[in-house]
Length: 329
Image 1 (tube, rainbow, N blue to C red):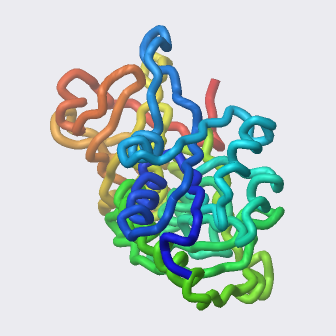
Image 2: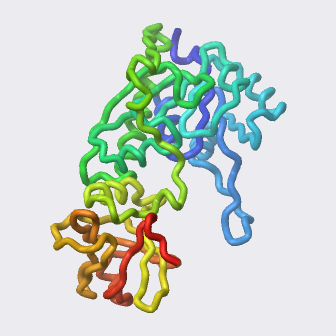
Image 3: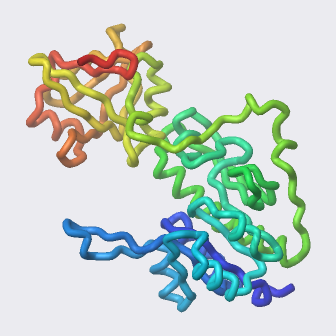
């Protein structure tokens, strides 16, 4: 089979998916249609509609675009069938109903941003960094009923530097994943597919680390943990959605503070959550076994800024941070 003979429908929304779609098109494959999220209203009154990165690119190269509100909608299913795809590719998109992923004769494969079966779930990049992993990667696999459990087609690994935050790792995987999709398509057209069941990669499900969706409370810093654990937690959520802590003032008032960067420092033992600052140059917050020196942060309702800028108008002396286990009224 030649590249131009393989009819592909691509499904995705964010930049991570747009990079993959661009690579598939630039590699000479025949993308006959694109499915992405509906345009989002933005602005104060929601009067402006914002298209997804995938839609913007698809339209720029003349690809047909479908934007269903409901993936089970009869009109959408009819339009999708009319594209007569041989195979579908899914990257950073919604969970598909069986009537969609089972439609093309050659199936549907997904690009997942982890080395499956590790980190199944919605936030694999974040959790890999939070857990202090030194290596992660991308996986292509065929979809089946259970989420992120289908047979593995290909994998590629990449190292995580101890200073990498989730944005850096995201970008590494974005380009690595785009290349992996093309390699997977090359395997398909040459008949060189060699899939493996995920159960071949582990002996006990207790070995598997999950990657559940991240909520605001997930991002709250626990200063009772070690400096290394808190450091990894911060970089695993930076710059988005960002780790945060609750700061208590001497007068009893409190406010939320997002922390985007920090360095581990040697410090005299103190109660976890204790703030040490000279009021001009640094803020250090105690952990179970040391402290972190904060580099940049953001108070609720204000802009992100370096610590020195923050201290020009804020006094954190005699303040402290709470942890989830010690929420005070």
